[in-house]
Length: 190
Image 1: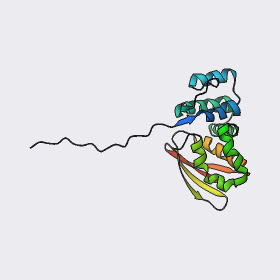
Image 2 (image 1 turned 120 degrees about the horizontal axis):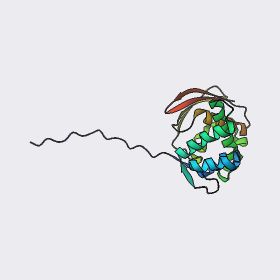
Image 3 (image 1 turned 60 degrees about the vertical axis):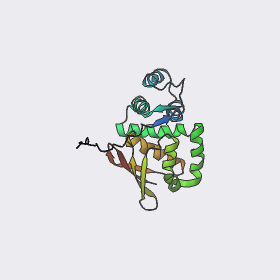
Image 4 (image 1 turned 45 degrees about the vertical axis):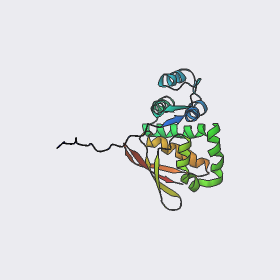
């Protein structure tokens, strides 16, 4: 009688890390922060050359360059507030790119509630279709977002969403309620 080898449980392959469209980095660095000189040289060393943009970049390049933006442009602020300002600057600059204008032009017309519902679609435009968002209402003018995202700082996302809702004619207040290695929870009110 032959003895069969033990089978290992089938492991699910991990999806590859996301790639971030060049328009996102263009939005932050070229249009938002308008970098030049030493700052631009440091970005090139991290993998993003503003003079030779690529179609997309590994998410790790995005993380390193966002950290540099926080340090160089908002170094006087706390980590949380610095990343929040990076997020706000990103949305401002992205709204000036060809891809970002498509989303930005509709925001004032649809208002904050519908803009919040479209967050997954907007994140997909920014190369993050991998992010899962569970949204629950908090009264008429609020949403609690559970976001599965291992790559962005919650404060960066909070700042970006604040600016997006401002473009939708709202006065948002976003609180980071919970942080973990796999994601975070934001309380969004307007």
